[in-house]
Length: 625
Image 1: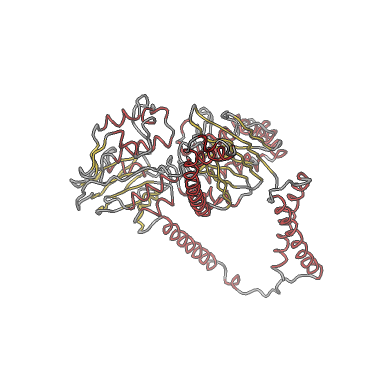
Image 2 (image 1 turned 120 degrees about the horizontal axis):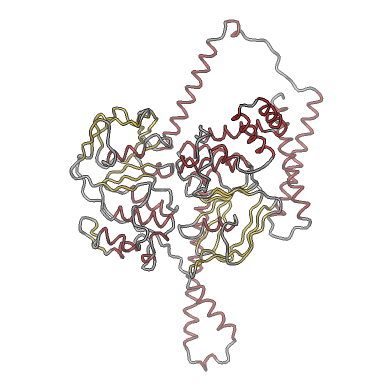
């Protein structure tokens, strides 16, 4: 088990605010680790410290000497003047230099230069690399490699940066919110790629399905410390619950003991003059341990919607185009009371335009929206807040309302009281909006939307910057929300928990109304695709000449005598190699010092490669037996 990275006693703070202290953990070859914490606890900062992009107060980050590391930032910083292809080929190297030279030669049209550059492409494997690059970009939805990066959307820039990192083939990849700004189709492609790949990962993501299907270990930052859990996200939830229960029980014992010791300490000094000093020291240790606060500070979304009547909205013959691109084509729909619908589709298909037309922020080409008189929209825009960044948090909310009336007048709160429900302490409320983290901005924006007590929520990508805990609370709130909801999100877990049905924007103005959640839609889509595949194969078979349908009498291929002997030997060898691998893993995981660690690590790699090779050959031979 080869060690790629070792973190030793890493500590980072901002002023008097401690993010993490004395953090120690390691990353071994093949690990796929998810990093989890509430917003503001230091997930991104830890990644940036590891990547060398931010300093830390103390500790050490030690990489294996020959390791190659790739880092995907939450908002990739790319040179806008370069094309997509040039961005992906920005790093120097023989293969990349050959591709650049060939592209430059083709641009000149000089036959001799093209021929010479072609020879270099042959020598360095450039043809294969360029094909892989263009295929990778195509799979990520980038088809025009000559387009300038400055012309790309945030999601497209993320895809280009992702393609570049994957093609660079680093030993260790650090990913900060890799699913943000990607559509569901691309997320599922990335999920399948990473789960099947042998790449080593450390990533921050709030996508719970992504965590569950890719990661084999979870690291949580909680109260400035870290806790490591083997297994995927579902296993983490169970193990974390057990940890909190055990800590709560231990804390109760400590407080009981502290009460007894407190009585002893409260007696007259002479009563304990002859007592052992260790008991006094133990008392102070108990006092420190009892001061730990295990209470979870969570967002309180107890805001009820205002009354909504039976008429919500009716869409009549809505059409919308941008040049040659059709967003909606004669769309008709009557929205019902308490209906909750999710909108999905590829990036650029018009999801955000759909809801902007509904609320009147974007004109239609034709058709009408008839909105009920009692409908009160609450719109969460994926572009974020329109607050002045130079204002303080408390001032921004106070400008919206000095007296916040909730739940049809049943509750009245000051702006400060309301902000505390969204985890903004009095000190946090004095922060400038420009200084807020992405998660804090999202919470503030959500607060500004809900303080109006809307009865029809329209949420455009609400999950991008919210932590997993807040997402769970938002899901619970929306499940019980006595109003209407339209949500655009790439978070499949969120869709599964919230919506009654889906509007699937398929492109060219087509909107499919699917009666179910995302997982049900995905299963239905796979069944349809499988059926279409079978029908295509059946048509292909029927189109063959009649003689091609006649059965061919062939004897099944059997093992030769030599292959039988090889098959028997392989079985024994695989058993021996499995036993050796297991013994090495047990020794590595024992927690004790391992003698000859370097030699054993190399042997472990050799054993794994041999197993892969021999198991593949065993499968080939087993098909003949």
